[in-house]
Amino acid sequence: MKSRLNLVAPASRRWKGPTQARRLCHLCLLFFLFLWPVLAVQASAPADEAAFRRVSDRLICQCGCNYGLSNCPHLDCPSAPVLRQAIRDKLAAGLSEEQVLKAMVADFGPAVLGAPPAEGFNWSAWIMPFAALAVGLYFVQRVVRAWRRRPPAATVDPALMERYQKSIEREMKHLEE
Image 1 (cartoon, rainbow, N blue to C red):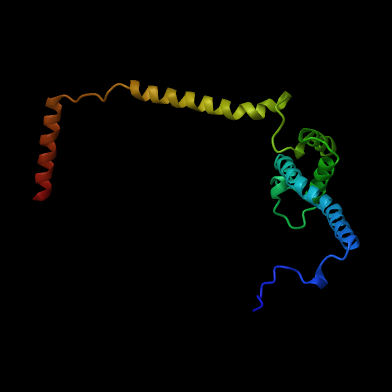
Image 2 (cartoon, rainbow, N blue to C red):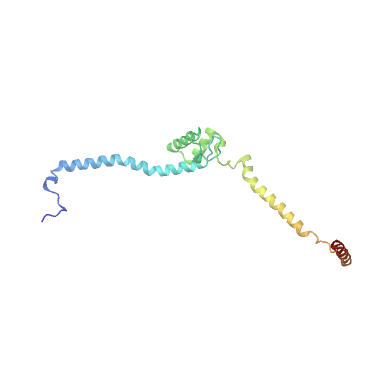
């Protein structure tokens, strides 16, 4: 009985000398020669994409939407594709992320940055929110202390209270009649 699973290749399919083995080696070599660059590009693409994402997250789109460059919602945005391509070109040229940011500021001005650099007058943008919070807390503390120090309500003389109570009762009786 002949098995359906023939594990041994028939004689017609066996290797017929070194030429067929050589052809197989050439095919494998060509396959790896053409596949290797594709694999290398795919291996470096996630790193480049991550660097692109980090840089574009630190920049603002210049179309006026004030969104981050990576999140611009406009479909036909005139500035986002230009800025994104400039970032990709600079990263492909081998610049570091900080060098790309400096080049973008040199090309498009400091308005392209998502956060002002912590230098010069820009320190006020970093300090003022905390200073305003501190001043606000100081005034809240002063108001709470003033409320606590207020003298208690004046006590009423019991004789005067009794006199007013009798007056109210008299007027109530007068209304009932």
